[in-house]
Image 1 (cartoon, rainbow, N blue to C red):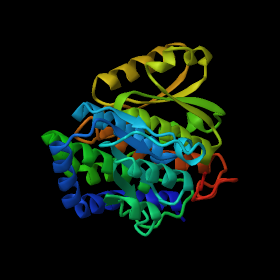
Image 2: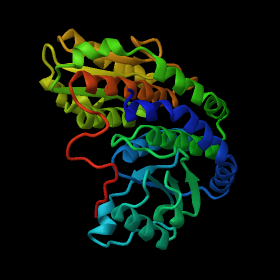
Image 3: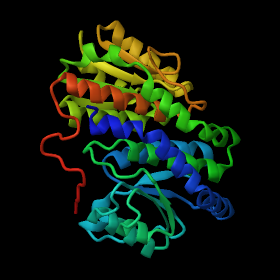
Length: 335
């Protein structure tokens, strides 16, 4: 019987198609608003997998619009009660449940300071949904596995759609129409060759850069929570500033290489570490772990979908239940 994680990953293409279709008018209106009155800054608010999606959002928004994107530290509002100065800013809050107290405190503080709140949230009855000036429901349906999959992929697609609607980028807009099919193809791709090198791993690196960095962060989290592997995500540039020192013969690493200059650097760094004896795995267009997406900004979504199937199978191979990792709960409420 398939795990919940596998079932929910398989539901991602339909969820993304529904999210994009149902939010088309809201996205168009938001794009018009942002072009008419560009915000001086975009602030993201999220934790966990949603925060990894926010990292992706930073790159896709900054590269397409030039507006800087910063991540809010929820403790500033929830623990220190320090009011932000964000009049005219765009705040994008991302959450599966929309109920964590620190996220809600942050959104409330930013709204009171004059920011426009956009919520990418799966639970449309949540407090976060009620606080949004622009609500973009993820429409992913119930997610029962502790490890988020389809809600994270829908969040990523929503952020790409915001950037496309705002910038008017024709190539990204066109590629989004084929995204559900690309995600479905990625889920069906054969990544089983990566299981033997990782089945006995205790620690590893996950490398990416640019559009792929948030996906590397998400992959490292999933390796921790489903497989109990101490995986750490690094930019292919940042890993040169010290972390590469611990890579020795047999050290496993996974690189996510997009079909752009950032992906070229990931491939170069991975090859350099492989030359030292690292066990190097590579995902991306034309890579041993294959994907196709139609646009470099969407390739990380397809890579993550393929990875979710891999990490579910890896967890089972290591004797773990990916649906019920010990000590973790589906909804995490932090203050």
